[in-house]
Length: 264
Ligand code: DGL
Image (tube, rainbow, N blue to C red; front, side, top):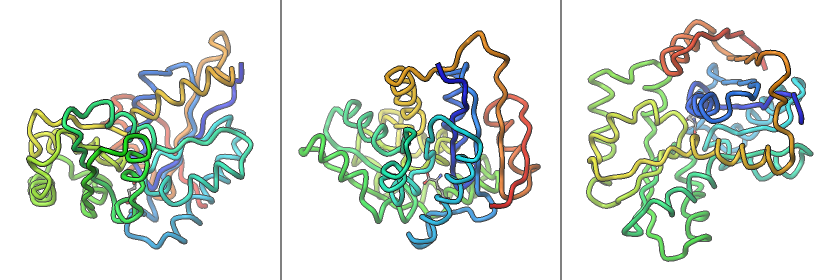
């Protein structure tokens, strides 16, 4: 048993798609989440900067005495997961591998699409992980630089969002039977993405898949939270205004939360 919280980080609200799954799949666990909204989006930034910002969030989470860290951001996972994992003594999970495995499981035709930020697509990390596990899989990646800013500005249901998603995804339509949402912001655009790709395309939420791996690790290391302990308390931090974060978060997770501002 280990009653310390689990730390989650993202460039902004995207990581909440992982938290929503945490509340569903592992409601007994305590969560500390940090979103670096003041500097989002990360996806178009240089790798060195993404690496520095990610380490700043990791170091903040370490001051909070977390028992595990989940890098709930594909971009940060692509750039920094390996070195962070190697340097910390607590388990560190990224969101890419769980999404890659789920896509392999789901595809019938061996044709997998990946959508992500410019950095995630440039890193080619999904193709690498997928083809290392299953070399015959065809992987087609597409960069969607406008998606995360739409989510950060809470425009998910706007006509602009529909137009942007339609225009951006058109090169993938009809080409894949499984599509990895390779950015944790994208599940907030899921209804539009599904509509554009067609009902038969299976959408893989890499963040949600990651929660399954969190559960496996908690069991493996026997560090689950003791159910009999005091009520769980969750902590949410943003580097921008708590008001904007809270609005999107409460709408998405359908629950009230407290958000504090923090400078990194
Ligand atoms: N949520 C992030 C991801 O999963 C990054 C979005 C961004 O800041 O560009 O890649």
